[in-house]
Image: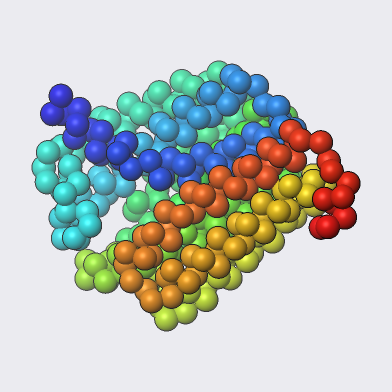
Length: 293
């Protein structure tokens, strides 16, 4: 049971925020590709895949950082840093999780299987990218967005333009919230030699995050236009924009605790956008509400 507890911590099962940040865009794509009615089978497959791949991503991230995490206050108690889990055990766990995810994707069409290989490569490469580029968040954004074209491929057997617009929106949003995350660790990252967008943007970090959030909202608005979204979607998008403003206020002092709080608040941004898509497809249009928009 002690070993299982360490493996659970390595997979971040006690910290589900990353799973939700990966899950919400997946649900956006399933709703749009399935016109509001994706099959229960597909939803279950993608939900399980989200959990497995997020867990695998955490394991390979800690494997890559196993010699650095012990020097960072926030991560020094991670299982690999403390020696509670060995590097070999971590790799075995990573490949086991990836194998289970691969078994899931094999139940889908070959286009989806091919896209899953790209998703795996991005997820495995991201933890090492911060060694040589200040933009590892771009790789994370792409990895966290690959479920979007996969969902369209699974349902439509193709990846249409709208899938890539949604993909772009999620990449930009991911870079924004992971920059908030990196702001909380900036001093430690500078000390141990880890690169990030928070370090690259420097004193322009908040301005850069605001710009990324505006662009993400722009691409989500484009998705709304492409599906002739009902007023419910636009109301939810406005709420998401207000949440972004709140986040910018939270990180204005660049306090690590507030930056982490703003990062975690993105769970609700993803949820409100998903609600917008769901309401668009599931509820009848209300003429008077549309006139207000």
